[in-house]
Image 1 (tube, rainbow, N blue to C red):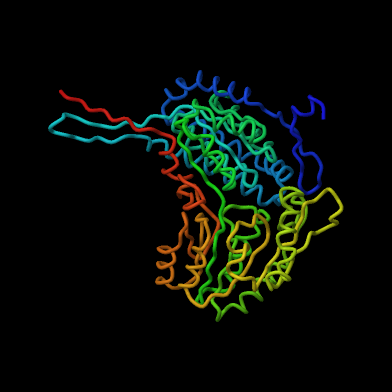
Image 2: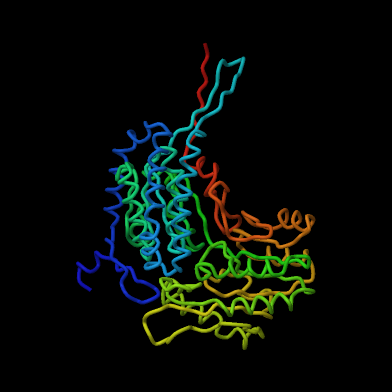
Length: 467
């Protein structure tokens, strides 16, 4: 590979193996230049009122909605998800920007009267130059999660998208720039995590860094950031349990499990990754689940009727294939449907894998303790809620969880006892922008979304005035 080729990243369409586009491979020097430009722009941006900043986000969201089809097609080309999922993600991006624009008036402090001191009050100020590292699985939505609160609060933001899916992020950035947000206030640096990502984590000039990705990479980012004084938000991996009680609406729970697991080819942090079903409904549930999963049409996301696209790349496909290749022999499990590479394995194009359901594996095997980032759903049978909660809490993860029941008692017990940053009742996966989102244990720290995220991008100053 010559020097010119190393300066470029080729973005590969996972459905075809062909190039979806190219981007610059930014270096640490490029990141430092972006920081310098942001530092020059910060005072002017911070001086604007939150309402002025909000207007530009509203305009950007409107333009994103108007260009939904164009953006969604690009997102499908670089990430692989079906076009209808890509369109939903583009709309979700616009909705998040609109939400933060709409709450711009909440950026205010408190008045604290103290008769023995005089007058006290607090004011909220932007942190300064912030960074964001975006994953490849939901690149546009997560971009909005970090961009909306950072910009409304008055910060400058430098975004490092995944080198697997940088194209749509660049398009979104161009839209924000065309709607009046200066390029040095909001910039995108494309490149590898080891080069561009590390530069953001190591820099003492970055006041806050929000990272979404794997536990292993998040731990590395945390180590690089140690001693720099920056505020870290880490949204890491998950192995979300779904508990189906005896009184649940079985058809609704089956539909929820299918949507919650196989959306985005199972490549979502809060996807349903472990299923615990009460023993008296287990056989009916497994039968209906298997029937529904076997009907999922897998293929190129651009083709009408496709319900599940490919995994992000051939390495991901190989990893999933290797993980479950001996599951029946080594663990006595049964693959109820799926379990195989689709298409011709010898081809270098199309990282497709069948949607898979596995039953009968031991509850302490890796299917239930580790994060499987792909379309594989293990089902375990439990005798009661106590066992379900004990098994659900067994892992190092604590991102999301759900319980499916008609009982208030079951609902309250699950929401109280499950170790998770978010617990759904009779649904899974969807997160509106108003709702704080984040994990416990090794699933991360800090919160995205809602007023909680806005607070993460501001610092509080106390003023005491004595007459």
